[in-house]
Structure formats: C-alpha cells, structure tokens
Length: 338
Ligand code: G3H
Ligand code: 13P
Ligand code: ZN
Image (tube, rainbow, N blue to C red; front, side, top):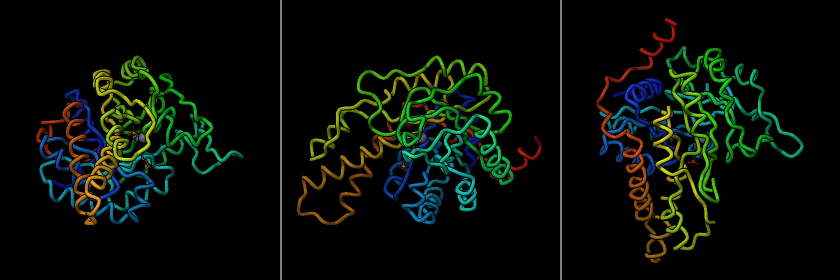
C-alpha cells in the first residue's frame, strides 16, 4: 500500500467515530515500535515529524525510514505528516520529500520575535492568508493540510500568547471555508510536553461539542494529548531521572473528546517518556553493556507497549482493512473538482 493522504484516514475515522493517533517520530526504533503496534492491532496510523525531527534526521533519513515503514507494512494505511510546519517553505520542502500531509501552524508568526525573544500570535486574517497559501499549493499535489486556530502551551510557549488561547468557535467555519483545510487543530486547554497539569486536568470539553456542532464535517485535531502516565514518569525517576510530579491528559478524557468530535490525536511525550525510562533502566541494570542495540531495543519494546495501548483506547484498532487506500493522484482529482 502506498502512503495515503491523511485526509482519507481522517474521513474514514470520522465516518465510524473513532480516533486516530498521530505519533511523533525521530528515529528508527520509534517508527518500528509504532508500526509493530499498528500491525498487531490492525490500526491505520499517522507518523508525524516536526521541524526539529526533520533537522535531527537531515530530512532524508526520516523520509526513508517512513518509506521503510510503508514497505514493511503493506496492509496498514499510513500517512506521513509534517507536524507544526512553521512556514510555507518547510511545508513545500516536506511535500517535495513525499509527505502526504502537512500542518501549517498559522496561529503563530515564527518569523518574528519581540524584544523578549517571543513569537507573536498571528491575527485571524493573517492566519487565514498563510494557511490558504499552503492549502492552494498542497492540494495541487493531493497532499492534505492541517491548520490551527487558538494556541497551546509547550512548543508554543515561546510566544507572546504563552497563556493558552482557546479556540474561538465563532471563527471555525469561516477559517475552514476560506482556507480549505482538511483538518483543524483546536485549543481546548491542553499543552505540549510533560508538564501539562499539576492537579486534575481541566479541558474545555464543551468547546469541542460546540465546534463540532458548527462544523460537523471538519476533522478536529487535539494536540498535547499525551497522558504522561505516572508509571512512565516513575520508571524514569527510579533509575536516576529527575522529573517533577506532573499530570497529562487522561485516556478517558481523550475518549470523551473523540465522542464529542475529535478525530486526530497528537502524541509525542508519552513515547519520549517510555523511551527514556527504558534506556535508564537498561543501563542501570546492565552497567557493563555497551552494545547500543540492547538499550535501543529496550526503547522499542517500551514505545510499542504504550502506543499499542493508545491504538486500542482511541478506537483505532481493527480498522486498517476497512477501506481501499487512495493515492495522492486520487485526492488531486477530488480537490481539482471542487
Ligand atoms: O508538538 C510538538 C512535538 O512534541 C514535537 O516536538 O519540536 O521537540 O520535535 P519537537
Ligand atoms: P504531547 O507533548 O502531549 O505528546 O503533544 C504532542 C503534540 O501535540 C505534537 O504535535
Ligand atoms: Zn502539537
């Protein structure tokens, strides 16, 4: 099966009311772990690379690792997605590289820094402008586009809008209609990274329902969706780590979000925690070992376990064979006919 447009994976998930995880990847072990989980649970999957991941892998390595994932797993619908594309140029480069989907993070102006070194948020109008530019380009190649309305903490806390700005439901319909995006990231109170909440998480669940009611056709995306399980944090700390006490988004809240209309669920931090805990434990227990395949192999097992559990909880499991995959050419024709 060739790489499929993310649009198809999300459309199919929306039809049946389940969520699809989009998992951030940076290296081979992570990709192998996620694909093993997808294979065993028969789940469609979105592998996503951030700007940082593209830099870390000189772009070409991540491309070939994703292609290897596709080649090894012909029965799994797999989309290759740029996460938090900061500008048109990186979206264009990613499309040239073979990504079947890109996110343009138009809510923040990454090109500008104020005197405190922070990036300002973009106005609604400017967000529409940069997002539409990417959509017009990407759709010519059949590539899907995710846009964002509102801001999250974490990677976006280098911005003036470091306080989370929840999505304004009044803006969603206009944004989607004027830009033509395939997926819309909404801010409902989550943030990126391990330190999301100190106490019980409070998410704007009603906001999801409100947005879904206004734009029922839109695939809504929930960023900052790691659950930061205590056992993963504890494992890191038991073997020399120093992570502070923290809470993420409970899996039950994600399930509730899916029921209310979220389709794409972004998870990075849980994989990082699983990976770090496994390395720390392995090296602590095997101080004489210096074969990296041993401790990197242990990371693969740990990541596989957490992602497999997410695929089951999000409802993705069992849906890999539900539909015939579309090609970018098929999508190109659909976009051209609109
Ligand atoms: O949302 C951001 C992801 O967690 C990617 O993080 O920029 O450190 O690769 P990164
Ligand atoms: P987490 O940091 O919660 O895993 O969020 C990842 C994310 O939103 C990637 O875009
Ligand atoms: Zn994100």
